Length: 314
Image (cartoon, rainbow, N blue to C red; front, side, top):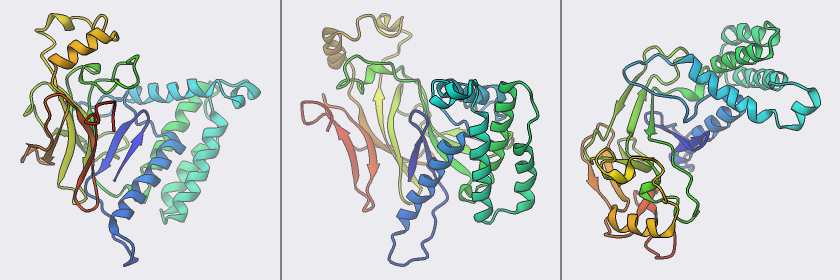
């Protein structure tokens, strides 16, 4: 029902639930199949979705430069590969071109009209820019056009989380604690997510400060697509608390600071809310232990990660 793309950025299908043609196969498995294929396509063709993209409901047009920055970061990682060293190149132009042509063939197999694919294929096959960087970015934009032709992307809303990046914490068993992220963000719905130029897009928020300052710690969409379960860390106002004038908190990696923050900051709890922002209610509660990263089971039960074992997360 959801997938993780590029450093844990959650993309969740709201409207599209594929219907099974096999009566013995549960329909919910097809929801997983859709997003698994979508995840493979995101990674394989590298469309550029990442936590680095800044979604702003005040300006629905996608900032081209932000997408290109993400692509360039991916190319930077590629430069350490054996292929880059062997070919003495700075950008994966040949690899990107090959992958895009393979994906174009896949789209034809899925029934996408050749009249839509062939013009893009021709542009992919030829070399336009002598500068490697410009040619690489040109191919990535062409790949973006191909990805948005995918018939699996036949839905018009995406559910995602907006939050500050989690700070690196020196203790792997405590990096989930509420204080390792700044308060802020919301659960959001993006309309018309596959618009190539960003036109017609609109972002709406769901929680809208109903829980006060804090941040999201994991979400899942119900099988019926009508409600969301999520973890939420309520946090103090960092603008009025002198301890948070700088971030990370000085000494926050030390055990004594961690113990103080555990005693003074509220643990993470599980909540549930309708996708229209109504019906918010708390699901779990504890004075000391945190509950986070919930998920719906097919029978409607909710599973989640918890500290209730008293040792670490379970």
